[in-house]
Every structure is written in structure tokens, then in C-alpha cells.
Length: 380
Ligand SMILES: Cc1cc2nc3c(=O)[nH]c(=O)nc-3n(C[C@H](O)[C@H](O)[C@H](O)COP(=O)(O)O)c2cc1C
Ligand SMILES: CCCCCCC(=O)C(=O)O
Image (tube, rainbow, N blue to C red):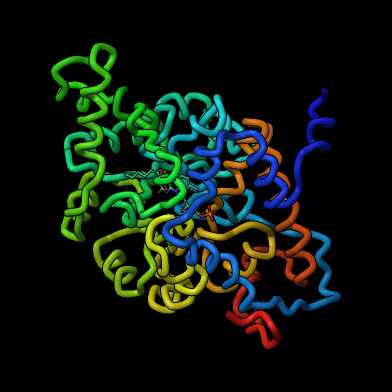
């Protein structure tokens, strides 16, 4: 089968990809990716909240030349989205993060590597060459290990640190994974960056190759950090010159604190509805946070973005760019690198034609005037 034939047989919509992934993955992996916290109300709200807003297009505005680029921290990217950090991609496809990262680099879309990836910081950097990549940090209780992870990311050419702040206390209550007894860390999945870390290794009595059980126990001891607080950020700010973004912000007060402590960006996110059921949908929180930040630093958003119109609505409500999570991991599940590549290409094409149909020529032209509050039927 040629690449062309393969592309023709690929799914198209988010639901098509999800359904195809369901037929391929073991139930426990599929449920881990798809599922959310509690009764999954927040996960659903991440989608229904988009119905509150309708696009009110303009016509006859010569949209023959269009510009989808966005600039973040001095670097211009071809489209206004990035691949969100998704951990343990090894449970999805044997190519794991290498497949996702290669697909992203072929199209110049930034890839954000998770701390709990199935492949190392250096392996991913190697397959990406000079392509844009950021490193997502879970701040372990062992500060020496944290410093080592940041230094490795700097050395390997990652150009921003995304500190995730909504998981410090632990996994959300995820009934699907509990039902399936899905505890990937117990099998060493997601530990690549720790097993390969000289500082982590130096604290073990035996190397992981000799005593993997002890390495897993040490990892589990340090990975959750419920005591993490705003005071810690001063240390991180001094540690690195790279831009730092806080991911998992939903409250304008926290956004303001982040700014005051020298953070360079914010990712408004509820972790795809996976952490706290009943919490606010990301798109609902976004305008409040943008009103507070007033353009002083970039505000990105994820959780619920599925297509081009979602991207445009999110940017109209104040985001500089968005992250996509589940859409690309289903691509990985279905066809590895080729699947992720196809998902990215589809999303770029969707954004492009949707932008044209709004009557705008560029992402820079998108503002609040694009939207009206839905008056019929779709209010939640
Ligand atoms: C399977 C899976 C693994 C994830 N792993 C991480 C992670 O390692 N680090 C992180 O900051 N967020 C992680 N997230 C959250 C995503 O970065 C992102 O916030 C979320 O997926 C966005 O919502 P969406 O899936 O609706 O696009 C994960 C999400 C999923 C679905
Ligand atoms: C220290 C947190 C580990 C979380 C693993 C990946 C993740 O974020 C998820 O949502 O699953």
C-alpha cells in the first residue's frame, strides 16, 4: 500500500479516529487515553462549552492569501497549535513518542515531550533534529532529579519548559483505569527519563537493569509532589533561562500569581477532564484569564479542541495558540507516525478553510468580533 492509499483509508473526524483506535487498542489502554475523572462531566463540558459560541462570518473579503502562522517566544510556527504532552505513549503504539515527534517535525508543529514519556529526552531530540520541541515537567519531590531533567532538556535543544501544576497531588479519580487495574507505572512504563537519568540512578543501590523493582518504587516515591507551591517557582525561575509556562491554570488569581513570579506563559487546561470532575471547562475559564492577563504573556489553551472551528473560537476568546491531546494520540494508535501526520495535516487543512470561511486572512486577524453568544438551543 502506498502512502497515498494509506491516507485515503484513514479516518477523518475525531470520532472516526477514536472509533478506529478502539478497535486496535487493548481496552485498558483505550480507556486510559479516552477516560476522564469521576463521571466525566468536565470532560464532556470541555466539548459542550464550544456550543455557547457561534462564529459570525464576514464575506467578500478576498481571502485568497492566508496566513496560519503564530509566533511564540520569538519563533514562528506554521499553524496555531502544538502537540500536548501525553505520557506513556508506549501503551498506544510501539513507535511511542518517536512516532509523534517525527510526525510533528515533518510539519514544523511543536511537540511537547512529557516527563513520563516512554522514550527519553535525548531519543526524541535525536529524531527531531532542529524541529521545535518543548519539555513538560512534572516536578518530582527529589529536587536534584528535577534539576537534572531540566538541564538535559536544555542540552537537547528543547526551547521551553511547561510545568504541569494540576497533577502534583496525584492522578485524578479515574474510574475506567481503576476498573481495569491499569497502573502502567507499576510495570516501569513512563520511566524512560528516570531510568536514563544519572542523578536518579545515583540514588539507587543497584542500577535499574539489576533491580527494576527498586527503581520503580523510587520513581513512585518521588513522582507525586503534593507539597509543591508557589514558593518553588522562584527556584525554577532562577534555574533556567528558557521560557516557562504553567499548564493547568483555571483561575485568574493563579494566572496573575504566575505572571508576578516571572512565568512566561500559561496553558489554561483541565488536563482534558482527567483530574477533577466538576471543574470548570477550559474554554469557560479562558476569557476570565485573558481579561486578567491583558496580553502581558501568551495564554494557550487545551482540553476539548477537536477541529478547525474549535481552534478559531479559542483564539477569538483570547488564546495565542492551542494544544491538542487525544486527537493525535488516536492517530498514533491507528498508524504510528503516519497516523499522527495525517491528523496534523487534516487539522491544518481544516483551520485553513475554516479561517477563509470566516472572512479572515490570518490568525492575527482573529478576535472577539468573530463570535456571538449562541441564542438558540445550544446553551449549557
Ligand atoms: C493519554 C494522556 C496522557 C497525558 N499525559 C500528560 C502528561 O504526561 N503531562 C501533562 O502535562 N499532561 C498530560 N495529559 C494532558 C494533556 O497534556 C492535555 O492537557 C489534554 O489531553 C488536552 O485535552 P484533549 O485530550 O481533550 O485535547 C495527558 C492526556 C492524555 C489523554
Ligand atoms: C506525575 C503525574 C503522572 C501523570 C501521567 C500522565 C498524565 O498526565 C495523565 O493524564 O495520564
